[in-house]
Length: 165
Image 1: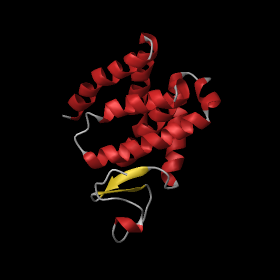
Image 2: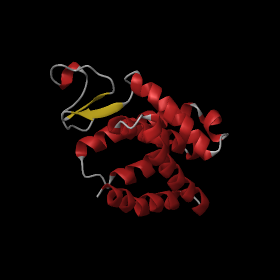
Image 3: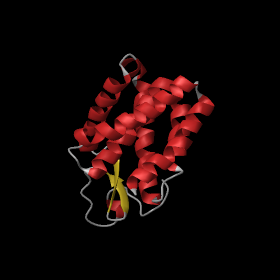
Image 4: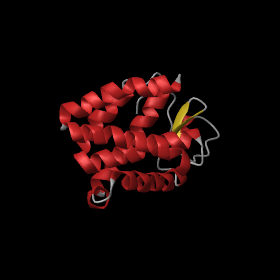
């Protein structure tokens, strides 16, 4: 089931990238997404929520550095159109935004690297952000900062119960 969802988003992701970029660059967008998908479990030590956050952060950062924040936003928004889970999508959008911000600020150090190396390094940077609570995860029906220690409601950690934020 999960594989089908991943594959179903590929034509739309490629199509959006192709509408904005030359064919070779659109293929690089798909390659970077695949690299983030395959390498994130290693950087996240197999933890699914961590993998998801790192994957979205790294891919968005790479996209923003390589092609600009607007292309990154358009391609990742197309990817999210295929999400069946609004909370997961809200979380992904927040991690994408963090990635775009990082990519815009660190263009030179990202674009000079081969794509696999850049994605690997960005996953490591994402892991540090995860550990310091600067990425987002869905926990117990709430979108919360990673490594939050929420005891009460969402207001205690700045999370939100299913609201787009």
